[in-house]
Length: 195
Image (tube, rainbow, N blue to C red):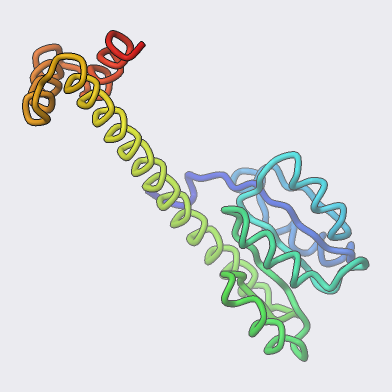
């Protein structure tokens, strides 16, 4: 599946109008929407409180904070991918502070082709995070199913004096015979016996 098929929501945080206008040229609506802008950390925090964004682009420094701590906070507590632009003379210091948190750091001024490349990197990273999120949800669902099936087994053991093996076999057989998941059978057992 090509990355071109995906659409990415973007929050650009920059006090510089010229920076914002420059980067906006690289954000076609076919791939990037919505694109929101903020001029300070506090404004960006209000915007993020309303909804999550796939990509967050931060141009440092910002009027109410440099922007590195904000980048770390967002990267640490959300699935957003953060791209932090810093002046060349600050690059190494900032990179050392933010890299462990998964924040991408880029020197500015940045040649045009490198902006496109940086955006490609963060899009690829966002797709990787999406896949990990799906796996995490799938694992959570599987763990929940195991808990429910175990609870149903114990319900059968306590209510019908079945052995654990018999209870397990009963749930599996009912699921196969009715062509439904073990979870559905387990939920029915719990509703029937566990009152």
